[in-house]
Length: 116
Image (cartoon, rainbow, N blue to C red; front, top):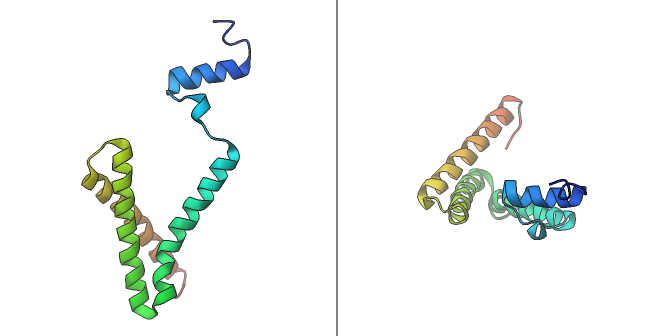
């Protein structure tokens, strides 16, 4: 045991493997994490903006809501395949969580006087 924890790197690898269940060789580097985070952010941010690029007024707003809620449900479906949980339940859960977050954000925006 003392040999295992003699160097911090070996101790970390052993703890990741045995306690957390991760393979240290499978963990990506900081640049890969930064790039994937950037791509995920841009992908998620463009979805609610698309209707405003193509439409105007209330039609654009309704399109934004419909497209965003659809994307949230599809994201939940995708998560269900990774977690092996019921797809519809995961989709509805993601839809509810994202929908509530969007509604709260909208209400706060209205309360402080933001205009569409």
